[in-house]
Image (cartoon, rainbow, N blue to C red; front, side):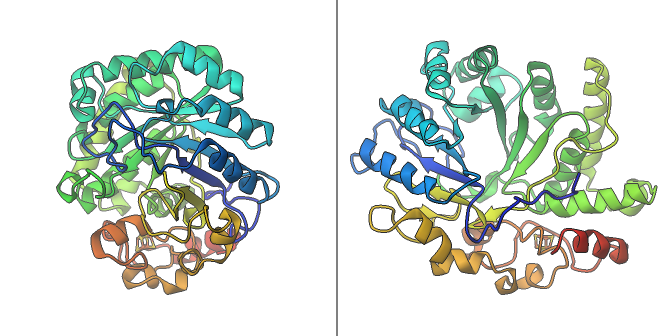
Length: 399
Ligand code: SF4
């Protein structure tokens, strides 16, 4: 298996994943909400017909079809969601849905999604207990609605991805959330590294050193379950570094300057895996995918603006005036984001840039420039001691 997975086609031409913000309406009021969700549906949102025209545009990207995710807000706040999912599936486009943990997350609604052709859902769990999760989501009982929906979805035959937004509120709860994911079962566990936009504040973020600690923890976790980061692109560097150390039979503790938070997370992970009797695999179960904002990834906002990511709110155009295909392939914004030679600061001179590139969203959120260096990666280019071995891996990946 490749250390870093690459889509088997040119991502200048076709995205791997398209996310549509069907609505900003939601009954939760989460502390970190990217969409600044509100109770009411936007009257200027793309209509049912416009949504179907968008799906027809997606079809013209060709095969293999991109994954298409219906997100929100809460997609269940749109009465036409089942119709749209059915239309998507009938076009041969694999559909996933990201509902919120509210009373709308019922077995009946999940069954209707499945019947309409959805393959998977993603649910958010931000704390290992009702108290911790509900505090973050700011609505009592959200934990129970979410875990009940999780169980029902698996029984119905929907794949379930669990998303956890990493912030200073839950840093040390991560091993307990891992335990919940491992016990309940999930297709994958995705750690969302917070980008300060919408309701999320810069002071909610963990530090760059803690990022590094969580990414090493994520690597360890990946030897037990399928796990990945979102907006944590320098995890690809961590995976390459750890892989090379393992290939050379070297103890990472002697070659990596681990942040103290890592040792706490690692020790709690060991406790948890012993409690639930899990066995570690030799290699990680899911290697990270080489895609980034605007490069394999595209987000369509509630009003049809085409962003490189949901966390990078700069528009390359609007699907009401141009096609998604044209915006993705030809807009200056998307072309620049796909050109790492334009990246600035440490990312611009980093040997990992071809597979990593940092979070363009975080660069924009903190500096106003999407091409600036990733502000929360503390790597000094060329400081990894095994450059020859790294060069061999990068050559094999053709980057
Ligand atoms: S400096 Fe930039 S390209 Fe290099 S590892 Fe960090 S985020 Fe990635």
